[in-house]
Structures are given as C-alpha cells and as structure tokens.
Image (cartoon, rainbow, N blue to C red):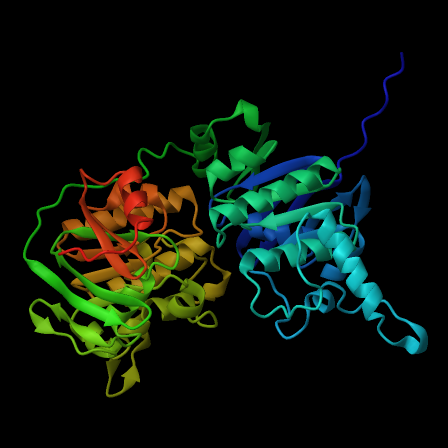
Length: 506
C-alpha cells in the first residue's frame, strides 16, 4: 500500500533572522504551521513574537532566511504581498476606518464595480452577509465602524481576511480587551476556521486560553525558537520554564510588611453617573486592590484621586492634608504617583528616548537656571533603568522599540523617581509576560516593604488575591465589599462584583 505524501505546512519560517541595530530580534527561527491547526506562539515580551508576526505580515523583510506559504518561498515587500499570498493578521487593536461602513472597511481599495465603474454596493453588501454567515455572526454591512465594540471590530477584520481567501490567520493578543462571552465567541470562530483547513496562529499571555484552544505550542526566547510540542505533552509550568529559561519560584512574591499610619483617606467621593460615595483608607506599607468587573468605576476613581478627572463631591487627604481636586501637579507635590492603564497613550511619550521618558517627572529637579543638565538626566535615568532591569539597547533608544513589559518598567521608573508616598498602579501587568509579571509583583511588594502605600487596580483575580492586603470590590460605581487577605477568595470577590451596589462603611 502506497503512503500518500503529507502536504507541506501552510506556513513555514526557515532560518529567519532579523536585527535592528545591535538588537537581534530573530535569530535563525524555523517554524512550521499546518493546515487545520491552532498553533500558539508563546514567549516573554521581547522574545521576538511581534517581529516574527511583522515578518509574516510583510512589514519587515528578513535579513536572512525565508518564508514559505504552502511549500513555495515567498518574499514580501509590503503587507499587500502577504495578503495576496493568503496571510492575514488580526491585531490586538483593530485598525478600521471609523467613518466608513463595515462593508467599505472590508473591501477598501477593491470594491466590486457595476456599469460606469460605479461601486456596486448591493454586491458588496451581499458578499459581506455571506462572509458574516460563515462566521455565524450578524453585523449590518452599512453600519459605521465607529461605535463597534472591540470584539465586533475584530470580527470585521476576520471577515476581511476571509474575503482575501486567507489560508493563514494570525491572531495577536485578540482577547486582551474582550469579555468572557466575547472570548467564547472568538474561540468558536477560530475552531470553525481550523476545521475548514485554515492555519491559525494564536498569540496570548493567558495560558488558560492557550491550553483551551490550541493544538500545538511554540515557545520563543531571546529571538530564538526554543520548542514546538503538542498541547497534550505540556504543562503550564513547563511552558513558563521554557519561556523564561528558569523556574519562576512564585508569581506572587508577597511579603508581610509592617503597616503604619494612614496616608491616604478618601471620603464619599462622587462623580455623577460614574461613581458614588466611594470611601477608603490606605496605610503605609499596605497594598490595597480595587477589584470588580470592567465598567465598575475603578479606573475612574483612581484618575479622580490623582486629579486627571474632576469629581463632584467628597474629599481626598494625603497624610491628613486636603488634596485639591482636578490638579495632578498638586497630587504629585503631595507624593502621589499614578501608573495609568494605557501605558502607550497616557504613560509614555513614544517618540522620545527611553532615558528621557524615565526622567520626565524630574525635569525641574534635574535643571539649573531653567536648563536641563544632560549629565544629571543621564545619571538619573541610568539609575532607574538599571534598578528595574529594563532591557534596552541604550538610553537613547526610542521607547517605542521596547517590548510591552519593558515599556511598563519605564513608566514605573518615571513615577518611582518622584519618591512617592502613595503609588497608584492601574492594571500593572496587563499585556506583559509571566516572567515580567513576577518582577513587577516583586517590585510592588518591595515598595510596600519600604513604606509606600500602594493602590492597585486589577482585573486579574489571581493577581488581586496574590498581592493585596485588602480588597475593595466595586460594582456599579460603588464599593460593595471590603475583604481582608484572609477573607478574599475568587467566590467572595466575584459575588461582591456582581451584587447590586450597596453602601459599605470603610
């Protein structure tokens, strides 16, 4: 009996190398992705995943090695070349034109034409309906893209990929901003595409998703291919060890600290329609977590504390002194620091260097007669960059070129340089890898041990339970429970987060 030859993988990387100056982003990476599989790509921030995706998408050209699609070498000079070859990328943040309709976004630049070379909108809408039917979803083709949820924007991007007859679909952190129900729907679509022979590459820092969805896992580290194995042959601990090159002793290295006097007092803070009667206290050396579902008002409360947003009534005191509302400069002068949720748009100036970003909050202190002292700036930046172990080629390297985890460390460096009494961190580990998460957690624990009061907003329950001395649960803009470390469990936090808001005394 003659054995039939196996078809070649739909996507192959053969010895792909890519460098940016002295940074070796990819070092001889070889990888196969087969038809009819969901293939996970795991690695710490800076492991080379993003560069690999951009090479596959035609954004970067390899310095050495090549890419094959269905066994044929391909050389992409632009993303359009990758699309024509059947490769599509769904990014974490979709890039639709907000003022165009769903159909116009899907067929941008290749709209079907009727007589007189006019756009055949009926044909375009009919094709949209057919594409969405394949995905078992309903989105009106004439609906404006503006106002679509992130989940629906991703579905539009997937429909666009199908319209190109994409055989390889790369999903880069697609679930980061999705609810549980939206994640389930996305997984159902990914499985249906797999079952129809599409090769799906799935990138995520969430191991539960990787093990629930994927057939094989490839691990990368420091720009190199480390391993590729079936999911059934791996454990989460094994993947972590391969990602970081060592055992992560504990993801939540919480240390017991001596709690001191109250340093932050919030009383009946209210902003109409956003949050109401919020009150709590935080002591020196304490980590207090604000937990709750998306939309509960947690980020809005800490933004108001810091003065980014105004509030209608209530008071905030730092070490007994009243903090004026709506004045971030006054909050900084009082010793309050805020590490925002959106590090790229609110925490960093992406066009500036790593060193300049790390010292933005200290510019006046580093100046003399109104002139910035470059040597003093460099010394201050180097101190914090080294202390937080930021992986950067140099202080002059643009912060935009750093991985997400290292960008987060730069934001922390910027605010720690102010020597705060109260450190507010909003989603401190969102979108960063497990190794860097452990480092950030260790840093927060150490800062609490040094007498800083830490307020942490987090949507990750394990992080809340692992790091907080107390948990304040919010629902519908109110605090619905205050739980000690011993009382806080997944069940107690989720019960309070889904319970109708009621006033809780602080």
